[in-house]
Amino acid sequence: MHLDFPLWFELGSYAVLFAILIGDLILAYKRPHVPSPRESALWIGFYVTLALIFAVALYLVGGGEHAGQFLAGWLTEYSLSIDNLFVFVLIMSRFAVPPKYQQEALMVGIIFALIFRGVFIILGAGLIATFGWIFYFFGAFLLYTAIRQAFEKDDEDEDTGDAEGPVARYLKRHLRIGNEFNGNKLHTVVDGRRVLTPLVLVFISLGTTDLLFALDSIPAIFGITQSPFLVFSANVFALMGLRQLYFLLGHLLTKLEYLKYGIAVILAFIGVKLVFHAMHENEVPFINGGHGIEWAPEFSTLTSLAVIVVTMALATGASLVRLRMTRDRG
Image 1 (cartoon, rainbow, N blue to C red):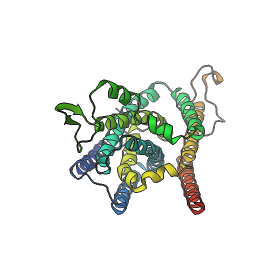
Image 2: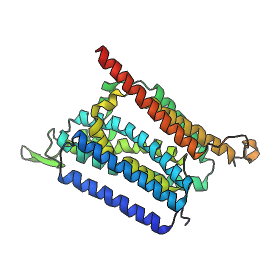
Image 3: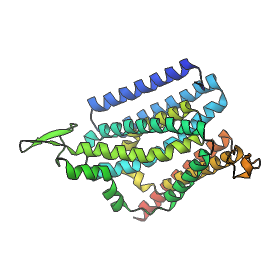
Image 4: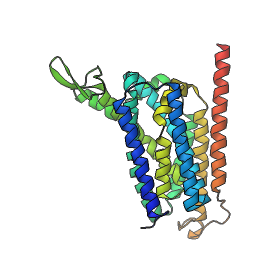
């Protein structure tokens, strides 16, 4: 088995990352509360600092190219994770989850996201190693996703109604599920009958949402690096602090209307990059006789990093300006 980095570095990184995630999960379960803006900001700063320290460690162990790939992948996945938060806000609103217990629900959602992304990373790495043409498919899929992201009509009421997902709606019809929460428990007793609490549906809705988002995020990061270790590490660091970001921004997320266009631009860029990469390494018989297309450009890691940072900065800045102008007019 080929390793991109020394075995001790990869195993040590996994151990530290999982220890942090388990600690965060225990903290969310033992101390259910609504984090203050200051507490949320401090935690986000802590996780961002960890990611930057990890990038420095990658630079020392594997060189600047690997460190740059991680940073570009981490920022891409962080941007796509913000998209998760839009739907998380709708799910919490749809089920009227008490703020005190939203931390635990979000942490379970993050664990689901890690599991699904881990599975897709393994599958994606296997497909890339076996079928070089898969980059054509990944690129086309990301371009389709970018177009859908940019032009799909926003309808908050419709989105809120669909936030449960088909699996949750099916279970709601066929299982005994009460209407009241019982702290952070998954079951309660109503009129002498044991029933499930709505928290079960919240977990299922978050899980199915994470499954759909993993379909977008994994092809996107494989467009930046083909190292499974870097892909998984970038995903873990992107999901760290997502819970605190939810409480820091809250419903402000739904008002940052230009963020979705920034994410669409990033997905489109990576989609084009993947198609060009596939053309450059082409082995498909009916395309250029199975030979690589030399004129197809290859974007450097630094170029990718610059596009991601500038795009998200412009989208966020434009959203905040628009929000302030709207408030001033109101």
